[in-house]
Length: 112
View (cartoon, rainbow, N blue to C red):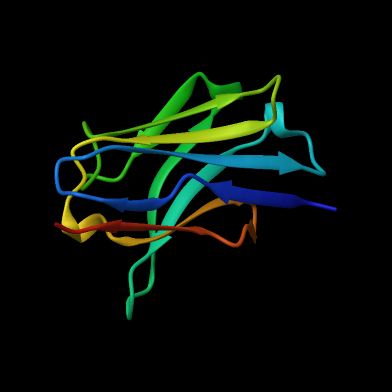
């Protein structure tokens, strides 16, 4: 059974940083393509970033490029999203995604 559990969200001031984690199980994590997506209140799901090639390659949406860094630890079956210089428009629930599976999400609120 595929399981994805996100954590690390919280309330942060503009310009602040957070590191999200996603603990994965039930599939071959090391070889899998993984995504981060987000959903702001009242809006649709928005793709944020992808990691592939066993973690050697990443791509980012234009609105986070240069601020967010995606990585994975294949030994720990854990996905990460380091988010720097957060802005109010980054406020959303963040989900890790494998194929059509998502976790419960972790809330990120940027306000201050």
